[in-house]
Image 1: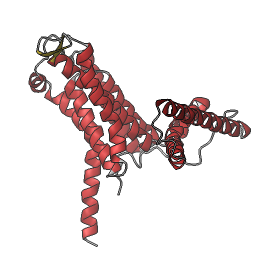
Image 2 (image 1 turned 30 degrees about the vertical axis):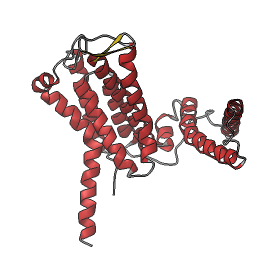
Image 3 (image 1 turned 180 degrees about the vertical axis):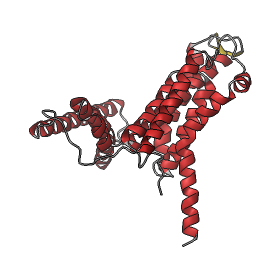
Image 4 (image 1 turned 45 degrees about the horizontal axis):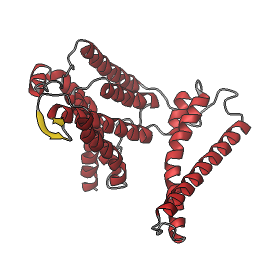
Length: 296
């Protein structure tokens, strides 16, 4: 079953879609636009994981969402609807909703980067940028590669320390010493692996000539249709953005969301459909796969 909408498309098409999604999310503070992109990325991320590492993957973006939502009205006291006073400062509804919008935007960006990392793997990334930006592609790929390796090595160190019973020490000074030792081991391991990788790539002549890829991705007319559709949707959004269609004010009072939907329902409908494309495709493929299995 093909769970990814761009699984058989050219890497340029898949990367263009998620870059367009990132541009849309980070270009406006309109809650309808950000909410649509959040729902689309969140639903597709759940379909991707399907219970595997679900809590760990979703917990990090939602942690930022909650922290930003709660802390924004503690530092920003603008807004005309005062809910209560905290330490003599007003806690306003507008600041709370603006913090919620910012938290959803950050969570959406994290979800999109997580999906992009799975859809456009290192081989596709090198295929797209390895010829023109060889060193930059290597650095970015190493960063993406070392994040899961860093987490894995951290867990291994924790298991070793548990075996040595260092984590059971109650003294604050001993706990601080344990944390510094753990950080030092992780830092030295990361530097050592980075130097080994750099020396290995240099010995193989990486970056001294144009790099070829072991996999060849052929461009088809379907890729052209997808790319023009993505660029067309991004162009419609940018034109509407310059005309002030997505301009939304939170202060001093938050504007009526229903008014925006009623007057620009087509724009918001296209954005929601654009954000839900991978999820709709996955659901469609799942239904077709279930029907085909029932006929066997």
